[in-house]
Length: 360
Image (cartoon, rainbow, N blue to C red):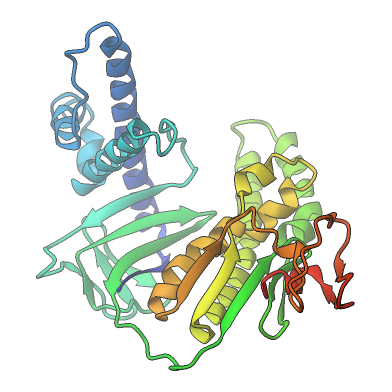
């Protein structure tokens, strides 16, 4: 099974400058290619013979028209702009298939990243000794923790807040799991992160954004009061991005622990097919729903169930699980959201609606 591994780097000032240059080249080539494709699409409205260039064609045009004029392109590895154009063409392919929207232009300082490649899959050229990794055109960079492989073919360097990270992909063997594992239903909510039907286990929602909201507002006001383009404003933005990264890390940590527990200890996991986009249109609950990370919960379960040889079952969103008694099967058609306890009119079964929802 192919998994990704991401860990922090500890670069010096010279290496940070090289990272920023490479991110700038990737961003510039991506935006240049995006502007070119948008211009061709406008011309194509009147002339259908115009073809949209492939990733290879875009790279040839970049070398001929952009690289020859901007010498700073040669200060970074050749794979940086090449991969950026490949990602752009893939994004446009998804747009043409109506899977996603039109790709946007990238902005400086937002999701900075670049791709590096060295050697081949048979003979990977990005080596590490457990403490450092040797990146093409940059050199040895300290690692926060050892990588699972001593050599890889490619990697992605990205920045979150003020920290730089390296991400790689590697093949792992599926771990051994217990032969007999129970089936569990999971209810994801706002008050509690998750409630398991098997044993009634409740996972507390950390509500990181809600807890940090006062600090975030204070730092956001600090940014707005600073003069645009000043060093103090840059410092304030840096501090604000650190706090946002902390909120995201708390949320990811809780979801990783939850999904790992579910996939490892259960043979089947049943969750509801929630329409998260529709939920986010409710402005009174949008913040609380986003703070739960419902989409990330499903995404992690999809690959972790494969890793631990378990099965993920997505229940139809229109199935009235909160209205059916888990004891006698009686269907109670009226069950408003404000009623948090289910009382069966036939067998007098009393149960929390989140707990009994997945036992049906």
